[in-house]
Image (cartoon, rainbow, N blue to C red):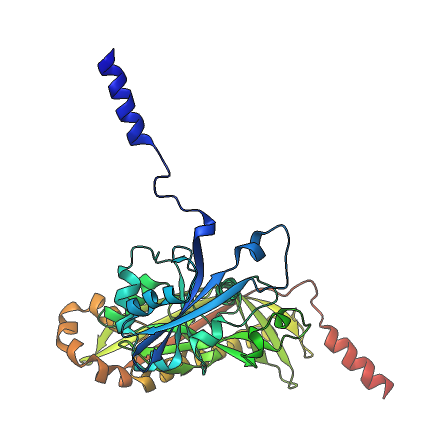
Length: 400
């Protein structure tokens, strides 16, 4: 009986929980991290929560977040130096966003990646972006009106834009590491900029105005070569990147009508097939994009019941899609950066030939032949077949 009692006591000791638990009053939760260049290495800025303003029963005029910065020779050192400013130990397990300053991105982000993937507190499901024309510190310090934390606002905007507009892409740490280190594929990151006065955007009043003094906007895709930012794609070129990499689920397009109006299309589905091949001893990429679309808005006189008219719209939509694809490819080739993974496609299709060209891929890619083909299938014309614009135009002509 005594042995049984001792055994139960021993098991009870092993099952005791919360031995490493920490009270919220003893820690600080970081939601965003910015990394910028500094004279002695790096500057790290953390956006931390004010728990009383987020979940407290009584709110005050204080901000929901605060930002703290410190510099060091390495990112790890900068992180530890933050303890000189922060009143509590920082926990990074709730990190939603990491922002690289544009200057750091141009110099190279490689030295920061080891810390990000090595630290046991960091999960790898945070979103990574670049601050355009400002520092990352300034970006994550701007207060936003609809979301209590800027980190939530930015990550939600990237997800929404990727799902319904398609000129941006949500990139996590694992994908970034793979793109930076793999053969035949380069990295991209979505860019973010601030309109208005970033300094004024740090004040609580920025969230209390109908039109905020400073607002955060997404702005295209940044193209990398190795770990260095080469430049930016505009909105249409960024959308072309997502078409080519089969990352478009819903977006909009438009075509010109014969009477100088426009007809808008809602892209409801897109499927891309891209394959590597060799022709006449040279590598070639063949891309086919199949698009399903609905008519979203008509600003011209057109009979949507006429199959011939619909066929013309379809042809124009296919031509426009091809233009978007080609513009994206040309911009990437200008930067000499294979962000589409064409090298990987050649490697999978022709592994022996790839071994011969992989060392010179950076010089081959800018002149690589890429064939694009788009097919647009019209599904629905909406609730009406006769455009309102046509009726209004005829009425105006009669009254004149």
